[in-house]
Length: 260
Image (cartoon, rainbow, N blue to C red; front, side, top):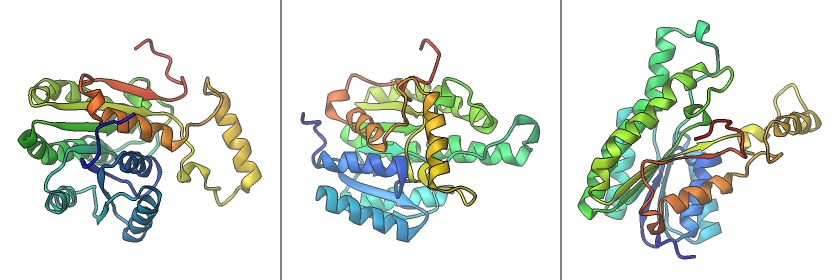
């Protein structure tokens, strides 16, 4: 199936590892020219080399601190200068710290808002002008199942991430007039490097048992593979998904219990 992404320019945030990297791989396999960005330059260049070897695509690595407005602006500007514009944005970022509401300070909430909400706002605000010029664009935000259903012990996420969905819905109609779609993807538990790395206090056997127990809470009986999410993102970024906008897609093995 041709997704119509050959030659498109895709910017994938926080993409040196994990789900962000999987999104970059999926887009590159479809022929997109991909810009990846993250804070650690060495990890980023390793990821770029792996994606080039896997796909043969043109991959542009831009080290930046994506927790700052200047960092985001530098990534967007560098990508647009290198490729002549931006067609696809995959907004991905780290989440706020774990913890309960009673333990959170005003500063914790301020930082969570900056990491989750302002990160999304800044990236979208920066890339939309390039998409308006072409009257075509795709914005896919990677969020969390906490958008639809609170998750235990991450009240900062529970309190901030639903706001991204509200903003997405609010700005969607205006973007749609210019052929720009905007959607969210809500990942559940995935087999990323962060999850698979054994903690200091446990060996691989203990880790395997911990993952087995975690999988029993998921209706399909396993954790997701990063490329499963990457392939969904590639479809939402494609020409074939032009009638899908303002939607929220959970990809969680059936873990969310709500009806919608």
